[in-house]
Image (cartoon, rainbow, N blue to C red):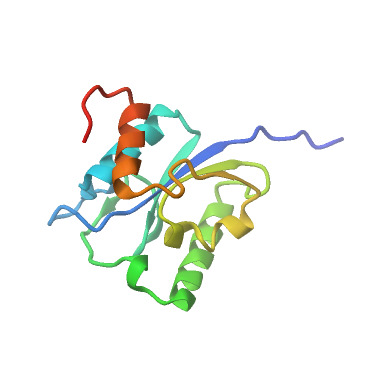
Length: 149
């Protein structure tokens, strides 16, 4: 019997943020920066099949997963350490998604996606090349907000 093709899924990956609550919380609430919160709302507006946070400490995190606050970022890690982190995230992704067929939308900085996109066939980076201010403006506009940050 021929194998039926599975429908492609849309997976949104949002990078964590350094600004966090000082106490344990759901991942979607732990990161309190404006960029993260707007990115999360934008991701939700896409109605993806799956959405995850790329955490420098925990790897791939479900937004409803409870986390302890931490002080870790990929931005201060050496490339070798980022590669090891990326391999962990790729292993996690392979258990829930198809890296050859699903579409991944990265709402994450270059360091968080650099060693991931080489292993993913279909991806989008809607905020690529934008300064933080332009990212906020783009997300705000995409969400239909009248006021600007």
